[in-house]
Length: 407
Image (cartoon, rainbow, N blue to C red; front, side, top):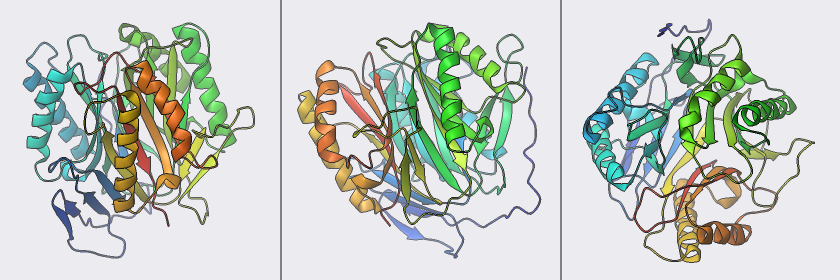
């Protein structure tokens, strides 16, 4: 079943003109106005095409669901083109376009698929490339070799969360899963991955209830959720997770969802989420919180909240060359510090980190070295996923980071 409701503007919402700033080679402001949206691309030292980071000021951000190819049996290039075409249509439906995509999570089955997808992404975005993170994982649809989800800026202005383009099947999710969500002006909340015990059914159900308690602690509810990421095993059981998500959200459409297969320890699933929150007065650009029933950690926060409309999306970080786990982690954090500095931020203003690791050595070294870089009072919200492999040869760790300015 496919339902295509029109997004409706809320009475009294504002429509502002866009100002696009930047290119991979530098940036030049066009039509700058006081309240204009701005996208600044920070060039990469090691890659002339993909930016090291994107710094954005915008009134309306959006998230897509994980987009998969329509013809899963086709060649990799055809699958890439299908996914990008679908992204273009989703963006059009929410008053955006590819020049206003600021972050991509690109999902590939292996390095071969990554190389083809990377070429197609370069060609499709041309000189307005977003920050990109590469995740090697089986995908929720059999034979699919590529997929993506995106963060974008929209010209639509809204006073409440909007969900667009509901799709679903009567047996699995009759109310559908939204293809995109729009956030009103305000704050954005990143909730670290949570994982409750039990088999996949029970674990999913209990983890969602735990996340709901965290939202309640923040004086939010499930209607504030704009994106969900599930780390599951095996991917072939993804329908079970989708059914539990549908039950949890009841009569409402499920917000955009992405699925990643991980190598789990004692938990069948871990779920993280992004939520919109009304603007809270704060002198800080990012704040951190721990629900009373949870323990705080010096290397990750349970919740991080970016205040205001300025956000920094770092392109996923691999080490610049092959090496031991320690060498890769040190190399990545050196690059991260340099990029944050260029974007007007630092390690004390990280909001969200996702760590993908495929070797015990890299995982152990990440645990050992993180305390050297993070302020124990201000670590980012985070999830860590052990993977079968990386999307780059001879690498065993990849880090995805979102930050706030160090105002």
